[in-house]
Length: 179
Image 1: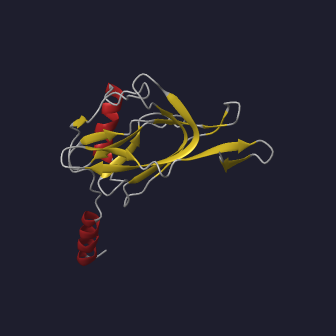
Image 2: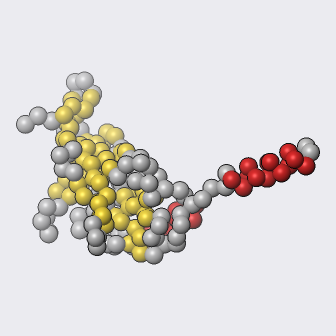
Image 3: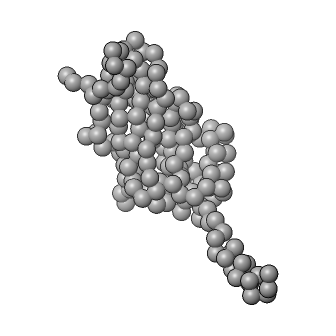
């Protein structure tokens, strides 16, 4: 390798260096969930956020790192702003798809992209409409958008995308529920 080739290689190496989050972790906008027992401010979760901001690039809505603080069987999502260091939790928990007897047949799933503000979750949504009352919406697909107004940023349900499914024992498939 001659001097010129080494110089080109060094410049190429420098220009392909990964750039991660632009800030360090600051805080979570809301620690406890109103609708399930999750705690977005636990020591374990705070450690996950700090690590993600050090090692990950945005994967959601151009500037957020979307993380699951739950498990593969229980999605508890938070969006970490890579510019401010603030975490914005989705205040719902999604568990698996259930048959008509309540047996979980399929893990919950999430779809999102780097260039869109929409997060769609599928599974059973643990929810509460009024303080002190909780219920589960089984086998749904529900989409949320991260919304920012002048003083507050949070996830907002698009409700129109909420579709409920039921399991057909004969065909072993999921079909949209018809009332």
